[in-house]
Length: 306
Image 1 (tube, helix red, strand yellow):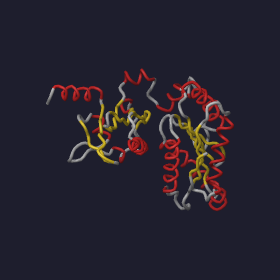
Image 2 (cartoon, rainbow, N blue to C red):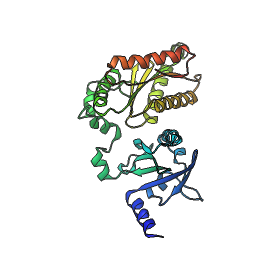
Image 3 (cartoon, one colour):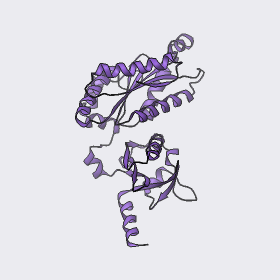
Image 4 (cartoon, rainbow, N blue to C red):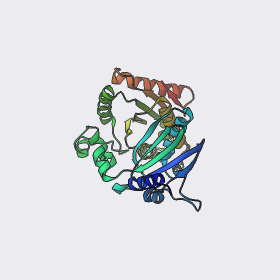
């Protein structure tokens, strides 16, 4: 092994970094050292380390699609997944981040475990949802939200009032950082018919299931809330128009494929929009609402953008 190769090997080992090199559309090979965390979370085969970890991770499944679109553009630079934890993992040593990079024509995906010193420096604390609220300066204590009935009693996600407080805070950040901000509104198709035919308990079960799905499927820095009745909203920071449409379509397909016991297939119509710097909160929401109505009026079970 050459000196340069040895240096690279020890750097990867020290920083718990896994590298996948892209060899073609959707095709990757593992490069260098396989960190312990990677082998533990993404099981390999007799041929070596796992080269498609997105098969095991909903978060990486989202990100791999974004990365493929980014790689196809061929422009040098990078995009990040944001921080996440795998389902069922509560150990503070399982916070991960992925980055897709193009440099000198080489296309790679880097998956990294965040160590305590790094997490401390970036403000990532142990409990992702609670710490998100603190990092965004929404509250000093999650209990304050609960005491003020900020959590929707049925779905156990944020309610409408909390969503507006978060939205105001996020728009304030956009004015400073100029980072993109997207909004998704989902409405369950034919929900009244579900209540009328199968009863309100069945309808409540659908709402709870959808709240859980949104909470578990999306990234940790995406904000999910029940907007009212059968409507849900998702606030998505740092995404392009193409990315938010892809997220909306992924959600639509996932919901359509879920079995709700004896109920018929449940579908949703989805409206998406991007925040325009300087516009009012109401203007932002109105455009997402109009996109939702476009989806409803054009046949339902669709994703539309305004």
